[in-house]
Image (cartoon, rainbow, N blue to C red; front, side):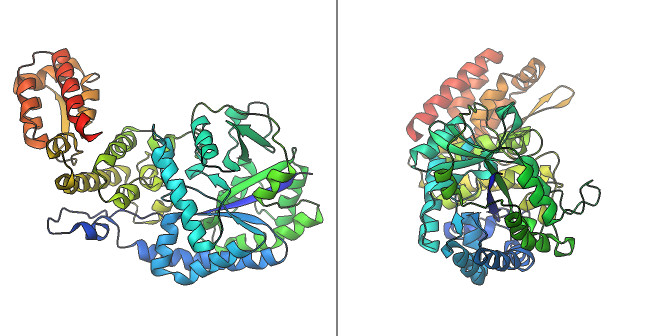
Length: 484
């Protein structure tokens, strides 16, 4: 029968202030109070009461009885707990000190940095997290998991470069093909724990659903499923918020978990810490993951975060915003994955932490995000040596963006900075290009919003799409050179 590694994701984002408005008098040191939602404290306190506190006390009891598990605590969660719920930090410290528990590393900001073309920021955030865990919990993680279990060959290589002994990922069927997820595998030199999707989601999502044909799920039934599963090592991973937050106490979720270790032991199913599993099991083969996978939705790709135009616009803009990251914590708060998942077309019926606020729609979330990002960059310009380039290349707010139109109206394309403007010039309908050229709209926007009079003059002399593409392409390279 297989061994089992059980891990819990524990994360709370900093939600953005959906009522944000520009306030010129706010100082740089006070930007967090301007950009972040005042309800973050209230939401955290409620989740602590319903989930973290009772779940932590339950885990401590189970650990004393011989149960073993891993936890991955995001840096944004710990920051908030240290400000508002110090007693909960103490509970997590007790768990971390227990010989039957292990802490995993992740990106400090539970961010999408692992998707960036340049993995430097991803590496910085994982090291920040590893240092935070050592400072607060007195242990140094040896195994890492990325946000949403996002994983590919490059992420594996980065984890191996940082010296981790293993990494967790999703057991995506299209990667495994005919193979079973219940083994260790190897990718780019590092052992990979593959989450068993079905068995994990039985607890994470289906447990409290009366329409599920296996409802109600009992500990003895689930333990039997574990024993009967093929393979050598089952990896289970789900949010700790499954206990008391996603599934309320009255569903029986706590009773289920309290009985599970005993039922597993009765069937000779052993829970192992991930570091012990690495010693007990050898990789059964190698995997090659060229396209990024994750635990999200049925596609198991990254479309939950960058799958639509809103998300991709924000994703592109936040990478370029590193140039303006004079106050880097704000830039990193804006990388939190929850902001991007809440821009998905299916929101607010999503499964992440942001769905617990007052449920703004995806367009509203996107608008707030871009307003805050534009304000943040604008405030940073005065601290950048080449202010002229910084002004011309900054991201602007939705009200300042260039909305491409045709003679009949808006044609569905909007540029929030010069780089995006350049990209869109190559795909918008030609009648839109000619419409704006004849009206002088391109040069007017660049002069008024981006304040680049030289580029505005050059564009005014253009007569066709290719003229404008060439002019903008050459100019943006000149502007970026002193900022790189």
